[in-house]
Image (cartoon, rainbow, N blue to C red; front, top):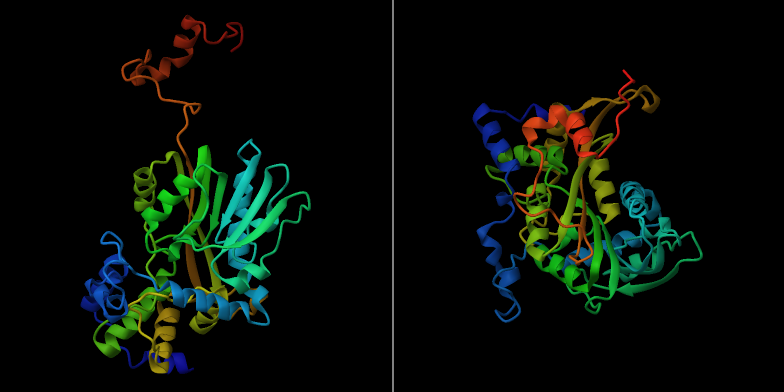
Length: 370
């Protein structure tokens, strides 16, 4: 009832709705020019790379992960990362090769590592920047896999050049400030013909939450602040990988929609996952009246009836856009495209492909078969 009462105080105008759509679809909202705020100015110019935009507070993110690891029911919040980790580990088996040395970068609580098999991996190095999370990480169920745990920051990889066969990262790189630099370090660590396999949240993740909070704040405060962290757009991932020197890229997107009773359960689970906002320009307070207004708007615009098995009451969907990528370090043994102009068949003759193949002797067709 509180949601419905708070909704009555919110007046929605079409002009502000148009403004909201523009803001919520633009990542520039969260990349304020004011990133030169006092939090960042405390660092000396020698410590900052002019080409790096410091969007996230990495120290705060580690603290958030440490707090989530101390929850008594921490395993309750692993459902999303476990599901994505299982899908990512399944892609390892699609590569018909055994990798001698594999790094799980940002392993979390072993969402990918526990699915690793000795038939595909010889040695596994599990890495995370949180000591508590790393200590809780589940090791491979296949006891034949050799493993070790190592405290590693994703922005500063300690591995030697050309020393790793496969690097995996599951829902961790979206908190990296210098993503191009991280890709370049991964490229450097991989052996020739090595593989980089990763998943990360895409730009449409939690768009319902972002829109509801922005609209509520626009009405009550006259402006918007950063309450949901920005995410990378899929159109940028390919260009960043090419820039780092990778080739034979495969990038695809999946969406996982999870229903919650209300906005409050969603925010509680995000906190339990260690995925709370860590932007340097985030607001430190989320007032209760703004929470109620955001919850009411969320339910008004996105609410739907829950399945009967869940009681049939109202629920809200939360969309998680997952970007999967596979990238290879160049090697002379990899297949190369034919030279330009070497084609023998024009695309306009594709409808005659069987006849052409028969004339050139590529295949033998049974002429007596209809």
